[in-house]
Length: 102
Image 1 (cartoon, rainbow, N blue to C red):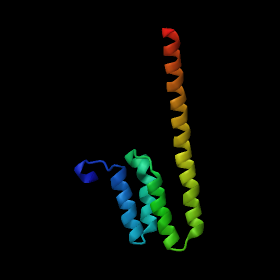
Image 2 (tube, helix red, strand yellow):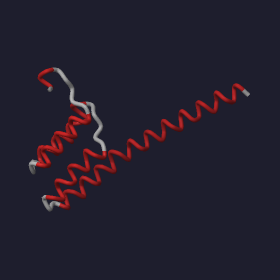
Image 3 (cartoon, rainbow, N blue to C red):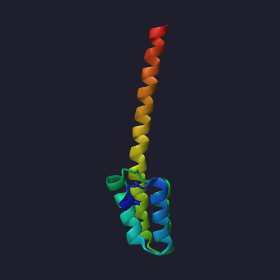
């Protein structure tokens, strides 16, 4: 894809992670997850992390799996906080607009 100048999207990268996990290539799946944001500008989703977690669980590597859960919380927690902050800004902007009308 990259050689053709086509940037992968979230669905493509998740499919790649899933393929690596199904073939017990967890290091490759980790690499794709780690490269999603910095190289492709794609934020990993819960599905990205859950697929990797499934691979570690199948491999009996639960300790590493708990690390994936921790990274999931950190990544999605920051996104949630940002979304809430944006929502507050929009709400305040709308309240100010309504106050000007009254």
